[in-house]
Length: 359
Image (cartoon, rainbow, N blue to C red):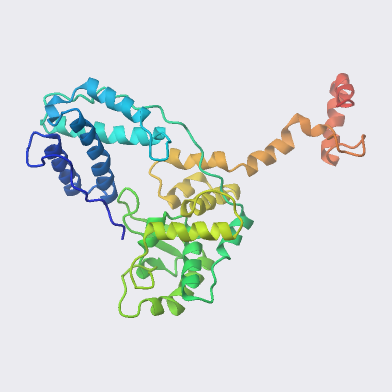
Protein backbone atom coordinates (compact mmCIF):
# COMPACT_ATOMS: atom_id res chain seq x y z
CA UNK A 1 0.00 0.00 0.00
CA UNK A 2 1.06 3.55 -0.60
CA UNK A 3 2.79 5.34 2.26
CA UNK A 4 1.31 8.75 2.97
CA UNK A 5 3.01 11.78 4.40
CA UNK A 6 2.90 12.15 8.17
CA UNK A 7 5.41 14.98 8.47
CA UNK A 8 4.90 17.07 11.61
CA UNK A 9 2.88 20.23 11.26
CA UNK A 10 5.07 23.34 11.63
CA UNK A 11 4.24 25.36 14.74
CA UNK A 12 2.70 24.76 18.14
CA UNK A 13 -0.12 22.28 17.66
CA UNK A 14 -0.89 22.43 21.41
CA UNK A 15 -2.14 26.02 21.06
CA UNK A 16 -5.85 25.71 20.13
CA UNK A 17 -5.96 29.16 18.52
CA UNK A 18 -2.83 28.82 16.46
CA UNK A 19 -2.77 27.93 12.79
CA UNK A 20 -0.84 24.77 13.64
CA UNK A 21 -3.36 23.70 16.26
CA UNK A 22 -6.33 24.35 13.99
CA UNK A 23 -4.67 22.51 11.12
CA UNK A 24 -4.11 19.45 13.30
CA UNK A 25 -7.75 19.59 14.34
CA UNK A 26 -8.89 19.98 10.73
CA UNK A 27 -6.88 16.98 9.53
CA UNK A 28 -8.28 14.87 12.36
CA UNK A 29 -11.78 15.99 11.37
CA UNK A 30 -11.11 14.89 7.77
CA UNK A 31 -9.89 11.48 8.93
CA UNK A 32 -12.88 10.89 11.20
CA UNK A 33 -15.21 11.89 8.35
CA UNK A 34 -13.60 9.25 6.13
CA UNK A 35 -11.81 11.44 3.63
CA UNK A 36 -9.39 9.46 1.51
CA UNK A 37 -5.97 9.06 3.08
CA UNK A 38 -4.34 10.55 0.03
CA UNK A 39 -6.55 13.64 0.28
CA UNK A 40 -5.67 14.12 3.94
CA UNK A 41 -1.98 13.66 3.19
CA UNK A 42 -1.99 16.23 0.39
CA UNK A 43 -3.90 18.72 2.54
CA UNK A 44 -1.29 18.27 5.28
CA UNK A 45 1.50 19.07 2.82
CA UNK A 46 -0.07 22.05 1.05
CA UNK A 47 -1.47 23.70 4.18
CA UNK A 48 1.79 23.19 6.06
CA UNK A 49 3.48 25.22 3.33
CA UNK A 50 1.02 28.02 3.99
CA UNK A 51 1.86 27.84 7.71
CA UNK A 52 5.56 28.20 6.91
CA UNK A 53 4.81 31.20 4.71
CA UNK A 54 2.83 32.79 7.58
CA UNK A 55 5.55 31.97 10.08
CA UNK A 56 8.08 33.87 7.99
CA UNK A 57 5.81 36.89 8.41
CA UNK A 58 5.39 36.34 12.17
CA UNK A 59 1.74 35.30 11.80
CA UNK A 60 0.88 32.25 13.87
CA UNK A 61 -2.73 32.88 14.98
CA UNK A 62 -5.61 32.06 12.66
CA UNK A 63 -7.45 35.21 13.76
CA UNK A 64 -4.60 37.34 12.36
CA UNK A 65 -5.01 36.03 8.80
CA UNK A 66 -6.75 38.58 6.59
CA UNK A 67 -8.16 38.55 3.09
CA UNK A 68 -5.28 40.78 1.99
CA UNK A 69 -2.79 38.23 3.33
CA UNK A 70 -4.44 35.49 1.31
CA UNK A 71 -4.23 37.65 -1.80
CA UNK A 72 -0.50 38.09 -1.19
CA UNK A 73 -0.14 34.35 -0.73
CA UNK A 74 -1.90 33.79 -4.03
CA UNK A 75 0.57 36.13 -5.71
CA UNK A 76 3.38 34.26 -3.94
CA UNK A 77 2.21 31.01 -5.56
CA UNK A 78 2.05 32.74 -8.94
CA UNK A 79 5.67 33.91 -8.72
CA UNK A 80 6.96 30.79 -6.93
CA UNK A 81 9.63 28.76 -8.76
CA UNK A 82 10.41 25.13 -8.14
CA UNK A 83 13.91 23.71 -7.86
CA UNK A 84 14.07 23.22 -11.61
CA UNK A 85 13.22 26.89 -12.14
CA UNK A 86 9.74 26.25 -13.46
CA UNK A 87 6.63 27.92 -12.04
CA UNK A 88 3.77 26.07 -10.42
CA UNK A 89 1.19 25.02 -12.96
CA UNK A 90 -2.17 26.78 -12.88
CA UNK A 91 -3.80 23.56 -11.71
CA UNK A 92 -1.30 23.25 -8.84
CA UNK A 93 -1.94 26.84 -7.76
CA UNK A 94 -5.68 26.22 -7.86
CA UNK A 95 -5.25 22.97 -5.93
CA UNK A 96 -3.28 24.65 -3.14
CA UNK A 97 -5.74 27.53 -2.91
CA UNK A 98 -8.73 25.19 -2.90
CA UNK A 99 -7.26 23.41 0.13
CA UNK A 100 -6.76 26.77 1.84
CA UNK A 101 -10.29 27.91 1.08
CA UNK A 102 -11.76 24.63 2.32
CA UNK A 103 -9.80 24.86 5.56
CA UNK A 104 -10.95 28.39 6.35
CA UNK A 105 -14.52 27.51 5.40
CA UNK A 106 -14.36 24.65 7.92
CA UNK A 107 -13.03 26.99 10.64
CA UNK A 108 -15.85 29.45 10.01
CA UNK A 109 -18.44 26.68 9.95
CA UNK A 110 -17.15 25.31 13.25
CA UNK A 111 -17.26 28.84 14.70
CA UNK A 112 -13.53 28.81 15.30
CA UNK A 113 -13.24 32.13 13.47
CA UNK A 114 -15.56 35.12 13.55
CA UNK A 115 -15.36 35.56 9.80
CA UNK A 116 -13.87 33.69 6.85
CA UNK A 117 -11.08 35.68 5.16
CA UNK A 118 -11.09 33.24 2.23
CA UNK A 119 -14.80 33.61 1.51
CA UNK A 120 -14.24 35.78 -1.57
CA UNK A 121 -11.07 34.15 -2.80
CA UNK A 122 -11.13 33.65 -6.56
CA UNK A 123 -9.19 30.71 -7.94
CA UNK A 124 -7.03 31.20 -11.03
CA UNK A 125 -8.69 30.24 -14.28
CA UNK A 126 -7.42 26.84 -15.26
CA UNK A 127 -6.34 25.94 -18.75
CA UNK A 128 -8.36 23.27 -20.51
CA UNK A 129 -5.55 20.94 -21.49
CA UNK A 130 -5.96 17.68 -23.36
CA UNK A 131 -4.47 14.44 -22.05
CA UNK A 132 -1.11 13.43 -23.41
CA UNK A 133 -1.06 11.71 -26.77
CA UNK A 134 -2.54 8.24 -26.58
CA UNK A 135 -0.85 5.15 -27.96
CA UNK A 136 -2.03 3.66 -31.20
CA UNK A 137 -3.13 0.04 -31.09
CA UNK A 138 0.12 -1.14 -32.66
CA UNK A 139 2.18 0.92 -30.20
CA UNK A 140 0.24 -0.46 -27.25
CA UNK A 141 0.79 -4.02 -28.46
CA UNK A 142 4.50 -3.33 -28.87
CA UNK A 143 4.74 -2.11 -25.27
CA UNK A 144 2.85 -5.13 -23.94
CA UNK A 145 5.26 -7.46 -25.74
CA UNK A 146 8.39 -6.04 -24.06
CA UNK A 147 8.57 -8.04 -20.77
CA UNK A 148 10.54 -11.28 -20.88
CA UNK A 149 7.82 -13.75 -19.97
CA UNK A 150 10.39 -16.52 -19.42
CA UNK A 151 11.31 -14.85 -16.13
CA UNK A 152 9.27 -14.50 -12.96
CA UNK A 153 9.38 -10.71 -13.02
CA UNK A 154 8.72 -10.49 -16.73
CA UNK A 155 5.61 -12.65 -16.36
CA UNK A 156 4.40 -10.49 -13.49
CA UNK A 157 5.05 -7.31 -15.44
CA UNK A 158 3.25 -8.63 -18.53
CA UNK A 159 0.20 -9.37 -16.36
CA UNK A 160 0.34 -5.86 -14.92
CA UNK A 161 0.63 -4.23 -18.34
CA UNK A 162 -2.27 -6.27 -19.67
CA UNK A 163 -4.38 -5.31 -16.65
CA UNK A 164 -3.57 -1.60 -17.00
CA UNK A 165 -4.37 -1.62 -20.71
CA UNK A 166 -7.50 -3.76 -20.46
CA UNK A 167 -9.17 -2.04 -17.51
CA UNK A 168 -7.90 1.54 -17.68
CA UNK A 169 -7.29 1.45 -13.93
CA UNK A 170 -5.07 3.97 -12.18
CA UNK A 171 -1.72 2.60 -11.06
CA UNK A 172 -2.64 2.56 -7.36
CA UNK A 173 -5.93 0.81 -8.16
CA UNK A 174 -4.04 -1.95 -9.97
CA UNK A 175 -1.53 -2.29 -7.15
CA UNK A 176 -4.36 -2.51 -4.59
CA UNK A 177 -6.06 -5.43 -6.35
CA UNK A 178 -6.24 -8.74 -4.52
CA UNK A 179 -6.63 -12.15 -6.17
CA UNK A 180 -10.20 -12.40 -4.90
CA UNK A 181 -11.13 -9.17 -6.68
CA UNK A 182 -10.91 -10.92 -10.06
CA UNK A 183 -14.24 -12.40 -11.18
CA UNK A 184 -13.43 -14.97 -13.85
CA UNK A 185 -17.01 -15.82 -14.75
CA UNK A 186 -18.08 -12.22 -15.32
CA UNK A 187 -14.69 -11.06 -16.62
CA UNK A 188 -14.55 -8.13 -14.19
CA UNK A 189 -12.37 -6.78 -11.40
CA UNK A 190 -13.56 -5.13 -8.23
CA UNK A 191 -11.82 -1.86 -7.47
CA UNK A 192 -12.00 -1.27 -3.73
CA UNK A 193 -11.91 2.30 -2.49
CA UNK A 194 -10.80 3.87 -5.74
CA UNK A 195 -10.38 7.60 -6.18
CA UNK A 196 -12.91 9.39 -4.02
CA UNK A 197 -13.19 6.39 -1.69
CA UNK A 198 -15.64 4.60 -4.01
CA UNK A 199 -15.86 0.96 -5.04
CA UNK A 200 -16.58 0.08 -8.65
CA UNK A 201 -16.57 -2.91 -10.97
CA UNK A 202 -14.78 -2.63 -14.30
CA UNK A 203 -14.49 -5.06 -17.23
CA UNK A 204 -11.43 -7.25 -17.66
CA UNK A 205 -10.53 -8.65 -21.08
CA UNK A 206 -10.13 -12.37 -21.58
CA UNK A 207 -6.50 -11.94 -22.69
CA UNK A 208 -5.63 -9.95 -19.57
CA UNK A 209 -7.31 -12.59 -17.41
CA UNK A 210 -5.27 -15.31 -19.10
CA UNK A 211 -2.02 -13.49 -18.26
CA UNK A 212 -3.16 -12.92 -14.67
CA UNK A 213 -3.93 -16.62 -14.27
CA UNK A 214 -0.57 -17.58 -15.77
CA UNK A 215 1.15 -15.20 -13.35
CA UNK A 216 -0.79 -16.66 -10.41
CA UNK A 217 0.15 -20.20 -11.40
CA UNK A 218 3.79 -19.78 -12.37
CA UNK A 219 5.19 -16.59 -10.86
CA UNK A 220 3.40 -15.40 -7.75
CA UNK A 221 4.01 -18.61 -5.74
CA UNK A 222 7.74 -18.19 -6.33
CA UNK A 223 7.63 -14.54 -5.25
CA UNK A 224 5.52 -15.38 -2.20
CA UNK A 225 7.95 -17.84 -0.62
CA UNK A 226 8.13 -17.16 3.08
CA UNK A 227 4.88 -15.22 3.09
CA UNK A 228 3.41 -12.44 1.00
CA UNK A 229 1.06 -9.49 1.12
CA UNK A 230 -2.57 -9.91 0.20
CA UNK A 231 -2.23 -7.85 -2.97
CA UNK A 232 -2.30 -9.50 -6.38
CA UNK A 233 1.01 -8.10 -7.64
CA UNK A 234 3.98 -8.38 -5.29
CA UNK A 235 7.75 -7.79 -5.28
CA UNK A 236 10.54 -10.34 -4.92
CA UNK A 237 10.21 -10.03 -1.13
CA UNK A 238 6.47 -10.66 -1.20
CA UNK A 239 5.55 -7.05 -0.49
CA UNK A 240 3.19 -4.78 -2.41
CA UNK A 241 4.78 -2.85 -5.25
CA UNK A 242 5.32 0.89 -4.83
CA UNK A 243 3.55 3.14 -7.37
CA UNK A 244 6.82 4.80 -8.37
CA UNK A 245 8.38 1.40 -8.97
CA UNK A 246 5.55 0.50 -11.33
CA UNK A 247 5.82 3.81 -13.18
CA UNK A 248 9.54 3.23 -13.72
CA UNK A 249 8.85 -0.25 -15.11
CA UNK A 250 6.22 0.96 -17.57
CA UNK A 251 8.37 3.91 -18.64
CA UNK A 252 11.23 1.53 -19.33
CA UNK A 253 9.03 -0.68 -21.52
CA UNK A 254 7.85 2.38 -23.46
CA UNK A 255 11.46 3.26 -24.20
CA UNK A 256 12.28 -0.32 -25.22
CA UNK A 257 9.32 -0.30 -27.61
CA UNK A 258 10.60 2.91 -29.19
CA UNK A 259 7.52 4.89 -28.17
CA UNK A 260 8.62 8.51 -27.88
CA UNK A 261 5.69 9.69 -25.80
CA UNK A 262 5.82 10.98 -22.23
CA UNK A 263 3.96 9.20 -19.49
CA UNK A 264 3.78 5.75 -17.95
CA UNK A 265 0.82 3.99 -16.33
CA UNK A 266 -1.57 6.85 -17.07
CA UNK A 267 -0.60 6.72 -20.74
CA UNK A 268 -2.04 3.20 -20.92
CA UNK A 269 -5.19 4.47 -19.18
CA UNK A 270 -5.51 7.31 -21.70
CA UNK A 271 -4.90 4.91 -24.56
CA UNK A 272 -7.56 2.45 -23.43
CA UNK A 273 -10.19 5.18 -23.23
CA UNK A 274 -9.22 6.83 -26.52
CA UNK A 275 -9.08 3.61 -28.53
CA UNK A 276 -12.44 2.46 -27.18
CA UNK A 277 -14.04 5.78 -28.12
CA UNK A 278 -12.55 5.59 -31.60
CA UNK A 279 -14.07 2.10 -31.92
CA UNK A 280 -17.53 3.48 -31.10
CA UNK A 281 -17.88 3.14 -27.33
CA UNK A 282 -20.35 5.49 -25.63
CA UNK A 283 -18.61 8.09 -23.48
CA UNK A 284 -20.90 7.21 -20.55
CA UNK A 285 -19.58 3.65 -20.48
CA UNK A 286 -16.03 4.97 -20.58
CA UNK A 287 -16.94 7.18 -17.61
CA UNK A 288 -18.09 4.14 -15.61
CA UNK A 289 -14.98 2.14 -16.53
CA UNK A 290 -12.54 4.90 -15.60
CA UNK A 291 -14.37 5.79 -12.39
CA UNK A 292 -14.91 9.45 -13.23
CA UNK A 293 -17.38 11.20 -10.95
CA UNK A 294 -18.26 13.75 -13.62
CA UNK A 295 -19.02 13.08 -17.27
CA UNK A 296 -17.21 16.33 -18.08
CA UNK A 297 -13.95 14.69 -17.01
CA UNK A 298 -14.48 11.82 -19.43
CA UNK A 299 -15.62 14.00 -22.32
CA UNK A 300 -12.12 15.38 -22.67
CA UNK A 301 -11.27 12.07 -24.37
CA UNK A 302 -13.70 12.90 -27.16
CA UNK A 303 -11.29 15.68 -28.13
CA UNK A 304 -8.38 13.27 -28.20
CA UNK A 305 -10.24 10.65 -30.23
CA UNK A 306 -9.55 12.22 -33.61
CA UNK A 307 -10.09 9.21 -35.90
CA UNK A 308 -13.81 9.70 -36.48
CA UNK A 309 -13.47 13.45 -36.91
CA UNK A 310 -10.71 12.85 -39.46
CA UNK A 311 -12.96 10.43 -41.37
CA UNK A 312 -15.85 12.91 -41.42
CA UNK A 313 -13.45 15.62 -42.58
CA UNK A 314 -12.22 13.41 -45.43
CA UNK A 315 -15.74 12.64 -46.61
CA UNK A 316 -17.34 16.06 -46.25
CA UNK A 317 -14.76 18.85 -46.56
CA UNK A 318 -15.10 20.66 -49.94
CA UNK A 319 -11.36 20.45 -50.55
CA UNK A 320 -11.67 16.70 -51.11
CA UNK A 321 -13.02 17.44 -54.61
CA UNK A 322 -9.77 18.94 -55.89
CA UNK A 323 -6.57 17.35 -57.11
CA UNK A 324 -3.50 17.23 -54.93
CA UNK A 325 -0.29 18.81 -56.26
CA UNK A 326 1.38 15.41 -56.61
CA UNK A 327 -1.45 13.81 -58.62
CA UNK A 328 0.06 12.71 -61.99
CA UNK A 329 -3.38 12.55 -63.63
CA UNK A 330 -4.62 16.14 -63.74
CA UNK A 331 -8.12 14.99 -64.68
CA UNK A 332 -8.60 12.54 -61.83
CA UNK A 333 -10.38 13.49 -58.60
CA UNK A 334 -10.09 11.80 -55.22
CA UNK A 335 -12.24 8.76 -56.07
CA UNK A 336 -15.29 7.71 -58.06
CA UNK A 337 -17.74 8.86 -55.40
CA UNK A 338 -16.14 12.29 -55.17
CA UNK A 339 -16.22 12.57 -58.97
CA UNK A 340 -19.97 12.15 -58.92
CA UNK A 341 -20.28 14.85 -56.27
CA UNK A 342 -18.15 17.18 -58.37
CA UNK A 343 -20.28 16.56 -61.47
CA UNK A 344 -23.45 17.33 -59.57
CA UNK A 345 -21.97 20.53 -58.25
CA UNK A 346 -20.78 21.60 -61.70
CA UNK A 347 -24.32 21.26 -63.04
CA UNK A 348 -25.58 23.60 -60.34
CA UNK A 349 -22.71 26.11 -60.49
CA UNK A 350 -20.96 26.72 -63.83
CA UNK A 351 -18.15 28.60 -62.08
CA UNK A 352 -17.27 25.58 -59.93
CA UNK A 353 -15.57 23.65 -62.74
CA UNK A 354 -13.38 26.56 -63.77
CA UNK A 355 -12.43 27.13 -60.16
CA UNK A 356 -11.42 23.48 -59.82
CA UNK A 357 -9.25 23.52 -62.93
CA UNK A 358 -6.59 25.64 -61.29
CA UNK A 359 -4.61 24.94 -58.15
